[in-house]
Amino acid sequence: MKKIGMLGGMSWESTSTYYKLLNEEIKSRLGGLHSAKIILSSVDFEEIEKFQHSALWDETAKILSDEAKAVESANADFLIICTNTMHKVAPQIEENINIPILHIADATGEALVKDGIKKVALLGTKFTMTEAFYKDRIQEKFGIEVIIPNEEEQNIIHDVIYKELCLGKCNKKSRDEYIKIIKRLEKDYEAEGVILGCTEISMLIKQGYVEIPIYDTTKLHVLSAVDFALK
Image (tube, rainbow, N blue to C red):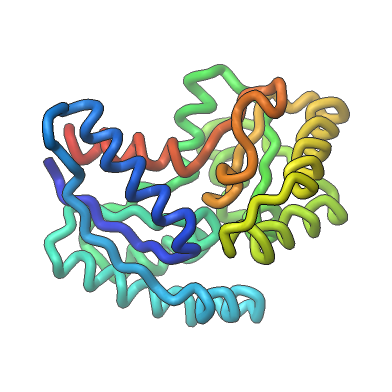
């Protein structure tokens, strides 16, 4: 079994889900008392979040690159960044380490292709929804059209992530808003599925709340990591 390197803490709420799912999946596949071999570096999200909203991405890249080097030094065989948004600086992190990074958008794109999805809605932070690093990778690498919410909806989604989900709060009103947005994207743009493109959104939205298939990036990233760890 390869040793999984994790960059977490962004937020710790979703990182705890990663840790749980990784171990559950290893146990499911290997049985007995098996658990995942993991090296985890968990950062202070307060510091990262301030840099994000000040557009100081080079500073975030420096922090995460230093942590990635530490994870590599602890003999991790590969790395997963346990957040969608911070894949914006994945190229800078890659330049500073010698172990591979399993990209969360690739794990998602492979699942979409497998299911024959041609047009998908994307929910996440405003950074993930509007910037090229995520949706363009899905579109260009996997040939899937990515639909994003309008600006008002983006603000709702973004604020719920940072003001509620990252603090461990799941409110019914916010869930209803998310469902309303997903249903509009399905109706107006014929979205065939929806990417939960923030690792916290799976705390709020589950399959069954909407009719179209939900692609939980946390779960898909975990499955990709376990595949890589065991192959």
